[in-house]
Picture 1 (cartoon, rainbow, N blue to C red):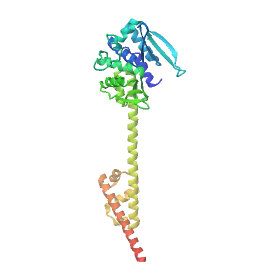
Picture 2: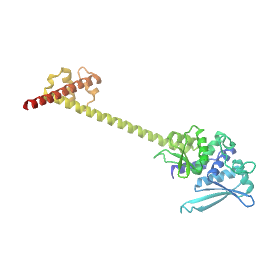
Picture 3: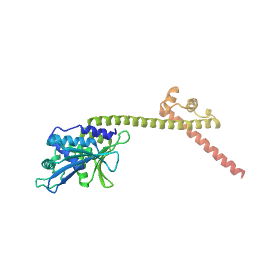
Picture 4: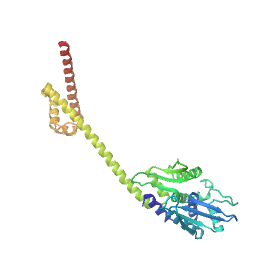
Length: 328
């Protein structure tokens, strides 16, 4: 089972205790995958279509508990995918359908059908607890979340820009930075940052999934921290090796050109130690001196040796140029 399915399975078993929250969740589910049918006798039937068993089970439980009615359940094969099923939950009673439509504010008192689900004007989602329920229902209906082992991505797909704006505003009310992107003919409300996905799982009250995600995040952060540390140490080792190689080349050049006896006693001493201990750090070389000196002192002496070696190389080049001129 994918991580997204695990989250939906957990959410499908969560029935909010307050009736107003139950209505808010029904409103979200119906808003995203519901249909209203009106017969020639002006009788109302409402139904939802979903390929997700968790959504069907949750909607059925909410309708039964909130409106004290048992909706009809049917299953059919999806014509676009031979192996998938479509679950259809139908409320056929006219009076119950009207009651649900009015409770979810999909129908006003005059009988006009609409989706006035504005965060400012709709009583269904004015309370923070109802906003949580609405996000939960929206995610169950058309949301998904990536496997946190691979990447962090939470999204809910809706059909209209108005629904996307409304859902984004509800999510943002919990200080979560949701954004909108257009994907083909749909609008996608998404969250990318790992800690904010943890927050939205908490908002939806998917606490088991939240803990699983946090565990993955901790392991990934530890792994990344270790990788950064190893990379840093490797870079430092490479830098030390390159520097030590250059120092030894300079010392050997002085030795083979004029001899180390021509430099001061302190420089000769550090030169001998560097050749004897090519892999030692500056701190370790300083500790081997008598009396010991610090890293800066060792570095100063080695830089002096490098300057002397460079001067000798320049002198050799100048002599070579002079000899060339004399031969001409």
